[in-house]
Image (cartoon, rainbow, N blue to C red; front, side, top):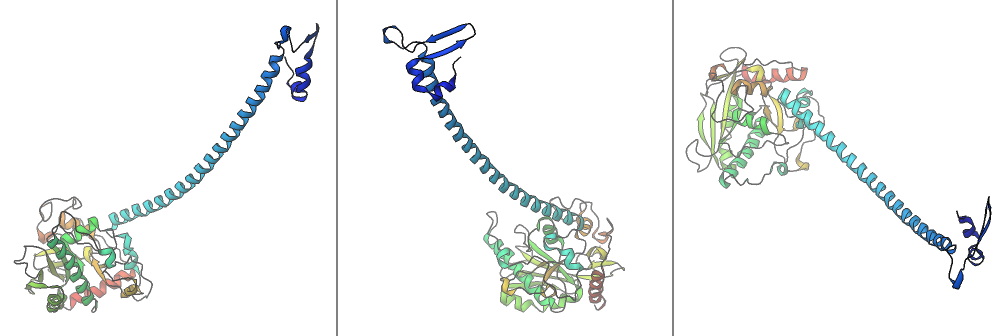
Length: 378
């Protein structure tokens, strides 16, 4: 075997004089040149070793290049991993929030995007910063769906403006305006944003007020006609029903309209709400106290009140899930053709199927007493 250190330390001597290698059996001298001046086989290891050193250095350079390239790749992957981890964490947080929101909505029937349970449980006399998500006209805006006629789109949008107007006026006397029937059902199924969004494929907007406040809405008819070009088409104060339609729309039921129902408390017996127009009875503890749901649309941040008590809301039944179960059946979340209860229950008995339990906070009890005072003054 050749000693590579010899070539490394004295390369010229190794090529000119040859190599002496001592073995246990004697000494063998190997010359670098043979007969005819040709280089002998002994010189081959020397040249091969030189080439090997060059090849080795080249391999080392390649290895160093690969090492730094690999190191750069590892650093890049680390950075991407951190960014992905942060994104996943944020996404998970959002997903957890949304899952909790859906769970709350399923259990309580209240949209937690607006933190409604917190709103209802706050002391009504406190002037705190609003906890609810605020609806703005920008958030309310929607483009015309391809499946909706332009005239229908305009009527639905206009009806929402009229609803906000009625809420503003009745709020002056503390009177709630409540989502009911098909409008409530659509909102319970689909209402996830800060604004109440009308259903472009529906034929009406259903709301209710206490029977005492029907005359207050009638008194707004002239202003509504001037401002929005909608006419009070049906005025039946005996049966507590009002219907507004767009000017020039024609007969009731042809187009889009606003139906307003008056509700009587403890009628025909204590603990029931009664709708004279439909001759329907509902459990009071499923609806009262009506709770603040979503704000009316405000122009922009500069027009939003600084305190929650000055915000104006559309209201929701206290337990909409239980109310809708009684109204449409246990399968109310599944869209189906037709109207009424899927079990064929007579409207006179749309309560206690199932029973709606109630556990009120002190603030909710206070609000219930305030709302019941409207009933007693009818």
